[in-house]
Image (tube, rainbow, N blue to C red; front, side, top):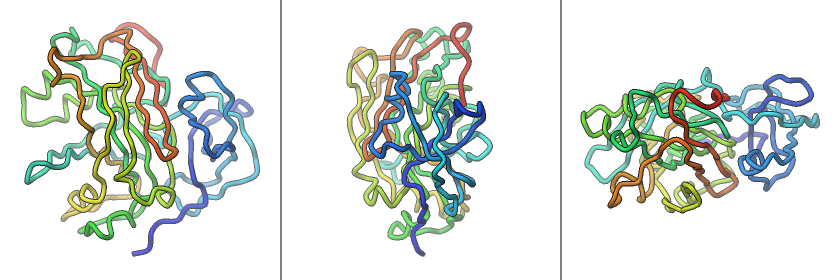
Length: 285
């Protein structure tokens, strides 16, 4: 199976200043951390891409647009969301997440009333590498797994530990609306030949709390056993050590916290403040 080849190298989705409409594009600056630039209000220019983000034949044009609002690199309509926590168990913990949990760069993570007060429900951060599947994958071997990957991105799988630890099914505790930052861009898979070397980092209120790597080949191979992974499936691959609820005393997210995650290899930064339900701006997708 031949690897997926896209014309674009990095892809962003955004509202353009020139049109006030949603576009996809390739950042003009090849090394710009678009999430960091958006956080600082710095200008971001992109060559417009014609076609779908999930279509490898989508074409990069010479039309340059200005980013007004940076969105998730895929829309909720394009996404099929899954998550895998791999290994160490003989069988990994797998669960689906609703697309309504997804938010983009700079959108607030909202702690819902059902998960308040934070000191009891322990909202927690989890930086994760995201796999974007580009062609139907079923019964894939580890050796061939990366041939089915269109691109990589980043996410912060904010989790609510009281609900998570009370039951064996994790979907409820990890699926609340507007709790899962995703982005800030897609990086074509050919630019990251070894995704298992991508560095992941979480910073909360100026303190580095996570710094590590994760697995990819095993994730795609396991999830595709007897099940078809469709184009547009995004898979969160698990988080490095350093999550808050295992610390002594536990570290938890609360309204007013400043939170960011960063991934290497051109993926970049996601900045998302934490709000408790009933205050703050609405999310941008």
